[in-house]
Image 1 (spheres, rainbow, N blue to C red):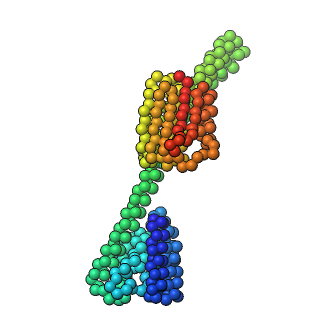
Image 2 (cartoon, one colour; image 1 turned 30 degrees about the vertical axis):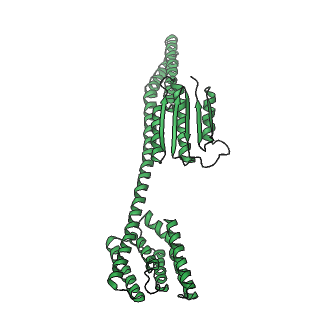
Image 3 (cartoon, rainbow, N blue to C red; image 1 turned 60 degrees about the vertical axis):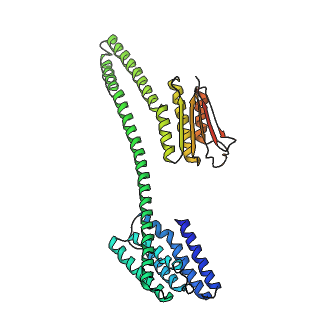
Length: 359
């Protein structure tokens, strides 16, 4: 939208310069008209963002830009006789109107539209001498089309923003649910064990002076329960940190395709050990993150065969000076487990992430 406004401003500036060169506009008048146009288009991005982010009451900058638009229209004269180029300068009023109505309720937008179209059409009729029915129809149609286009544009922006907010909310909800699940697992694992340990410790303390043998047996049970609880917690934490390869492949593919990157997956990893599958899952997650964050890929190919993962994409932005922290951490993880990781550009301008895990 900003780029479109810049092009519109350049077009109107060229129009004024041409009319000045033809002698149809005096230099002081041309300078005044250009100043008004610069005011309109200078304030337009801020007025537009106000309308897109919310729907506040009309602001001072909206009023100032409206007055500047009216003065710009009034300062630029009609085209030569027989020409029909008045729309090139009268449309600045309708551009302002298309944003102004986004700040108003329906009745206010309708009233403002009638006033702006009526005044603009009347001015065009006066300076051009053209029949008013044709002028009114043309100006009204132009105003309606620009207003509808701007409304649709804002509706699309709001839809995209709500979808993005919904995705972030789902991600936060998933994290919260996982934290609750982990908290419940720890409570279930440790609640009973710690309660039994507390009771046996109290019993052993009472029996220490009365029945040393039984106290020793109780403390032996305490040691056994502590060891079992520690093992259960370690298993729970390991399971919490372990990724599922199939889930990561599906998640990365869905994320890439949602971002406009066509993704193909060919995975033959059924004969790999759980540890090897977990390593490849980490590689898939990191590779997918890099494609989304650091590339403009339109195609990504993921293959897994014989414990070797290859992720290729065609969207390298620029050669990286050195691997990021995510790739460095993944390389260390792979090396520690006896595997390997390489990430580099390919001769055809793409990028290849290759991870090999021990069989």
